[in-house]
Each structure stands twice: as C-alpha cells, then as structure tokens.
Image 1 (cartoon, rainbow, N blue to C red):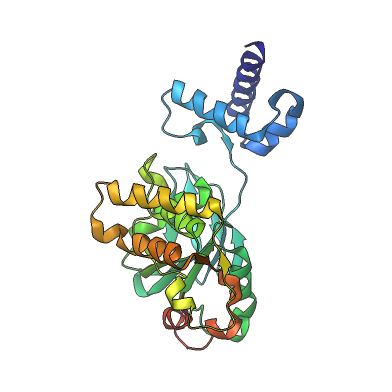
Image 2: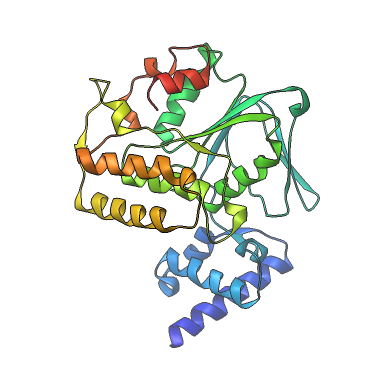
Length: 293
C-alpha cells in the first residue's frame, strides 16, 4: 500500500542520514519524528527488522537505529566497553543504564584476574532498587553484579549479559530470579534461551525461582489465582519445553515449576518478601536461597 511504501522510504532516509552523520538514534526518536505516519512504535521496529533482513545484516544495530536503553546494572568493578574504537564504561559501585553496545563490542571487567564475582539477574526493578538502596549499609554487594531488564528483557540487556560470559573464570555464579508465575518463567527463558540469535542469550544463567513450593513457607507472601491468560501461557510453555530437542535436565526446573503453579493454581510476586529475607546472611547467594528465591 501507499502508506507502507511511505514508511519504508521514510525509514530508509532516516537510516541514510544517521549513517552519513554517524549518529545513533533510538526507535522511539524515529517514531516521534513522524507519529502520524508510523502510528505505532512496533511498526517502526518491524520495518527496521525487514530492512535489516533485506540487506542481510546480522542485526538492526548496523542501521544506527537502536532500542531505547532499558536495563540497569550495578557492578562492584568498573566494566570497560570498546565499540569500534569508541570507549565507554560502567562505573563501579553505581547503578547505571546498560550502555549501547554492538555484537562486535568488547567488554573488560577491571581487575577480573584476581577477583571472584557473583552475578544475579532480577525480573523486577522494584527488587533491584530495594537491594541497591540498602547496599550502602551491607557488604553483600562487594562481589556481586546485579542486573535487571525491568520485566521482559530488551535486546541490549541480553547482549550485555552474553558479552559477560567470557569472564566465567571471574564470575563464578550466574543466577536469575523472577516472579512465581508463568510470565516469570517466560522472562527467565528469554534470557537463557533464544532461537533468533545466539548473541542474545546467556546460557550460563541458572533459574533460582521464586518458586511456589518455596514461597509457601512464608506467611507474609500473598498468593493470587492464576488468570486464564496465565494458564494459557503455562500450557504453551510446557508444550514448548517438553518438545524441544534441548537436554531434559536443562528444562526440568522450568517444567517442574510450571506444573506446580498449575497444580496449586496460584502465583506470587517477589515483592511480597521483605528486605530481611535478602539481608539475613553475609553471603548474597546464601541469603537469596534462604529467602526462597
């Protein structure tokens, strides 16, 4: 249609201008440059994917139009980033937006040769903030990188985690914690497994909950009934996980948790736990496991 051709030509012009001026723009910026034409931000993303595919590009990032930054990272050591000679970094002991990186970016964790770190990924920004705000009065985070994608993760957060995987000798544990509901399982799978592009998955992450069976031990946690949408998603995920050619041991924790959620017909959020559950031990990994996450 005429409108589709107009969208395509307008995006090609925006891409050409950005590449010519070496300017990186966000999908949101492009969308708001002509809201009446695009109508929906998802359409911009769809047509950018179409253009990248047509030019046989490995990623949309080569069009210099990227998603807006979303993920947050707290790190006890500075993380240096080199993208085609352009250098940036994430300062230590601060909470920062995950910076723009590309598939050919190189990450370096300062002092990683003599340091042993833990890494945890949290579904909820609220839990991330709760931990960060209390970190000044505790020693739990002197050896822990904390990341959140604020719900369903964006490509930038997943790429960032993928780029950290070569530092497995430095980062000794990789754990992810989500809500005890089918969407939490789906979010964890988005981080760990990705069929579209291997650059956007982190296979080192281990799913640690929160689990319905563990949360039953806490009287303060309020449970909600699964909605029809939750049930539909749980069944869809179970069918996918049990039919995939992935080793059964990899998918077993997800399958077991989904089955238990359907059995109890309940779900719960991580937010239901108080800060004492997180800070009851000098070891972060032990603390979170004790908190039934």
